[in-house]
Image (cartoon, one colour):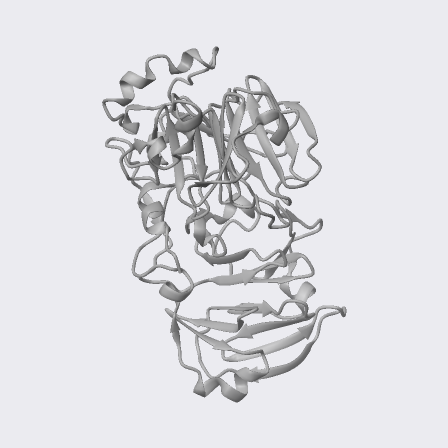
Amino acid sequence: MKLLFGTLCVCLALAVSFGAPTHHIDTRTDHNSTHTGDHEHHAAKPDRCDGIEFDAIAPDENGTIHFFKGDQVWKGFKMPSELVNGTFHELDDHHHVDHVDAAFRMHRQDQTKDHDHIFIFMGDKVFSYYNHSLEKGYPKEIRWAFPGIPNNLDAAVECPKGECIEDSVIFFKGENVYHFDVNTKTVKEKEWPQLPRCTSALRWLEHYYCVHGHNFTRFNAVTGAVPEGYPKDMRGYFMTCPGFDHGHEKHFNCTNPQLDAITTDDAGKAYSFKGELYLRLDNQRDGLHPFPIANTWKEVHSNVDAVFSYDNKLYFIKGQQVYIYKSGAHYTLVEGYPKSLKEELGVEGPVNAAFACEGKSIAYIIQGQKMYSMNLTTTPRTMMKDTILPMTNVGAATCDHQGVRLFVGSDFYRFDNPNSIAVNGTAVLPQKTPKNILGCDNQVPTIHSGTHASN
């Protein structure tokens, strides 16, 4: 497992707001004049902690985020800058690297040859790179590769299907926003007055950020809406800078990793829950980072007892209540919920854990050392049978393509299917949750305290 969040944990707390200092927002009235004198400045090896206005920001196919400024690029959140043409050699072959206009990492559901390529825009040209090698046939004129998109862009960011209606790229120039459909190559031009003028843009863990000056503003990729608490200073979130460490950290503690719940929804998004926080487990390429549960499931807020997925919905059990959310790019609470646990599932709380296997209509509820099963297609729900578990103190459970996993303290036990738990339970050896599930290796994912509205 390739672990990126050791760096992320130290540097980032992108999803929260707790009084970060607000600074003057730089605007670009003239795209070219913004960069006057850049070459001389870069000769002195710029320090991004000085408050740099980045020209472009984009992750590569390995999840390493590249920050471009003039002829310099920073790879990741801590390393010093280096020359852009040291990595992207051909940029100098065709145009002396004064600055990059925009960049993004392509996402395509159909996994065609363009998937995970970095596209870099300079003037009227676009370059496509994979593994830092230029794709054959590039550079191309922007008008041929992305018809309807103007030259001399300010920013660009990918938007996969599910977060946008179709696989798309969002381009920014001046006050205009261009939604480009990757498959049909059609463009919808929009105006998002809520946003400042973006000098670069970034998608990270399904969150979208408009960078302007040395500040950033989170936005909704479909509507352009901006939640409260923005702008924030880049130096307090995307890099380690003296005087910008907010402190007051909360931990998804890998040294005490007893989970409250864990599940995978029908779209393949895997989550673990603990206290007020959750982790996305299926995005390890871009780093593991904890977010407040209230960001995505505000009605539940924190301290869930169990979570399971069924029929494109997530079921949250908390105390004596059940919250059901429709799955999708943005989870929405089903009308009429929460309902009582007794009314919805026919059981009294407390519940220690719950799970349902993909494509199956049977839910399993764990209370103490007993596991009960029920058919979710029938109402009212009734218990069909119970199983005595081979272990006590199960705190979380999940069922996915890897089978059933029951979590006890810092360990978990894996079974091929629910029926094998009672038969093979005593023969299963425990595995370590921090290393195998959370990817910790004894490192502690952190998040700064506070609240942050979901997009």
